[in-house]
Length: 226
Image (cartoon, one colour):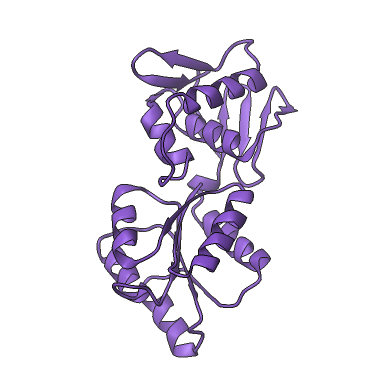
């Protein structure tokens, strides 16, 4: 899952980015309205955490603009403006939840998870052959045996599984699994795919390298969403 944090306060940005990454999410950051617009235009995010008071224009304006353009990702407002009229406005213009600062990080995580669960498809279980991925529990099993994966390995495997039967380029994997602000390294995707292959086992190998194309995950059947 890839999140966008739109927040201009450096300490809050650092706190949110570090904490959410430890929870297993890929996290991009925008420090003002212009950067948020550029990020939303370039990337499909699973959820946006949006401050209200921002340089450039306020978060309410951004939310309204995105909804008018037909963008449907969940939006969680994070703001010190906690009066009833502010909460009502945020929810009325298209926000999905509203959390006043200061907040407990555990509550933030619970609200993020609840918003992500509302989109049934992204939280579904995916099966490819004897590989089962439970996104809600962040667990992967093959042949009934749980596979120990790091947060990034899990995101990589989940993305490949959700696109099973299709060749996924290295650039596409980088965009959806790694933070967008990080600089792509020459072979980091290949290294992580090798980690996955070793953990998944190679009898048979589920991941095929397509020369000049990227990677293909398949097991002779169509992945099922449950």
